[in-house]
Image (cartoon, rainbow, N blue to C red; front, side, top):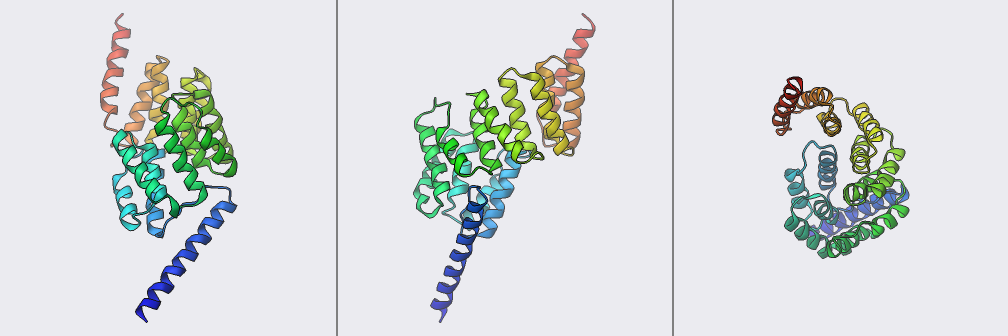
Length: 260
């Protein structure tokens, strides 16, 4: 009887997960395949923190998601995409490959794209991800990922993806943020400023959009504006521990210019 109950619950969870995958596929977004609803919630929280600049490495959410589902391909792939550490990227990609057969075809395409990227570090097109974007045409997060991967190497193509992300959701602050940096790297500074202003519009209580626009003002040598923006960013988020040092440097620059 106990065996039958466990089997029933396993089948029930499998059916429920399949229903979630079908729903997300119908919505033209990449499914999040996992045996644990709680693990999925940790994935969503980690994605929010990373893309909003609130925590560039939310290890607690990564850890808890994987504890709940050790074969969580999407989580492994996400870490391998966004981690700044090369060894962590490779380790998590190997784990994503190991459990790839548990994931949806769309998530398998994400893993294949990562494999290609690791084997071709100088690639500047992300063709495999753009192919996936055609299948999942309503996935703003996928467009953000493409732009994140390209905004330094191929900013003009990154702009295409980021513009798509905010066209899908004009309140998507993270989309405007990566769009702004892609514009900067493409020497389109007026457009970058508009993108960061939209980021502020979307998330006025988040320190990150003010920090991002402050970076642009520094680049343009508009130090008074940069100072105000950096101060606002730190006021909203004290975890941005690099900002006090920036504020001191900006004040010193302003004083130097005044006395020259």
